[in-house]
Image 1: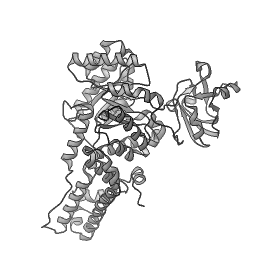
Image 2: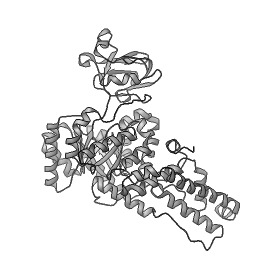
Image 3: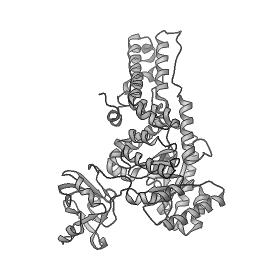
Image 4: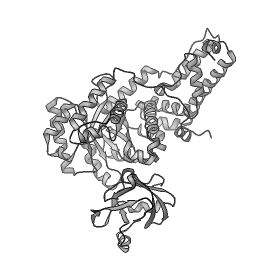
Length: 500
């Protein structure tokens, strides 16, 4: 049906208007239903928290046909309105009323419009990462290598090349080395005249392999092999076979169930649980990249199907927290999973008098993604909040096929909450390590500068990567900011806002 015919088909117009009115009613209904969670956020974020609920309400349903009908009328298809969804629906409803002959209507719209939503996102981004030097600037975060504690020139060159934020990962090095890194960062900041913000990652409960005798030679693994995870050293010593391994957190074995997946070494091979007990888990190897893999100590272990009832703040994190809170501008909350994790961090920071510090929720587990709306609302109790799309562990947990979709959904939710995003993991990995980027990672880098911050990992060519990324950001800022999205329903929204 062409636009002219559609405009003169009042039955069709009334059907579209009814659909828009239902979406508006749902926004108000769920805002009222979740008013307690919204009021729990700090006053600065309250209007954003309500908008997030409105956005989740709309994304519960599939409105692709509605989008097409609105586009045919040259009326907003809702595809760019994450940050001001109710206002856009109300204005759409008003325009439809005019088409139906309501010439004397006076529109009443939510105060949160396109311009206000942009201002809120810019404000929250500036509070967390610092003010932008140009419109749409993407801040560059760089992971500090161990050498940053002793090589001032390296830190200075990173700052001079365009680093905005220095990341210290507390899973590595020691407090003495962190102190020396901080001194070098502050010295480089003063020398270059650039304010470099400090980001410190809390390590979180990262599960890693532990092999007997250090596992120097490693265990050769092929499809069809059997592996055994032992919970205690005594259990491990009972077996002389080379396919017996330990893990850094043996207490989690009691949560493992038959049929669940266990993934090793950043996805190099996948296993399925055959039998389980609190002391011993038997696995069958179902897939091995390149047909054969070598498993060594200190390699990552992911259990995406297992309900791991473990705290996101480990005892090491709790010990580290006073130093990190006192010496950084923002904290990265690793392996955060649920609302209670955020509440625990808030209470501990409150005890340290540091609730004003910036908090970055690292979304790197399936559970965190599934709980994302409630995690974000809980984190909005802090004034300075952001999200990190930690694509390494998240891709393993969600599956590589879903990763493109998942990272977009996180971006949309962040836009709805007016919170800045860090695009992380393997940005310019080839360039950083080998000195030349792959064609695919250039495309990925272009996508990364849609976020408010992009993270680069350490490597011998880090300064080249910083300059390259900065140049891409400058070039892309002249082009369109966003892309059209088709608004099918999101499972994450339906789970967060069930009808009953």
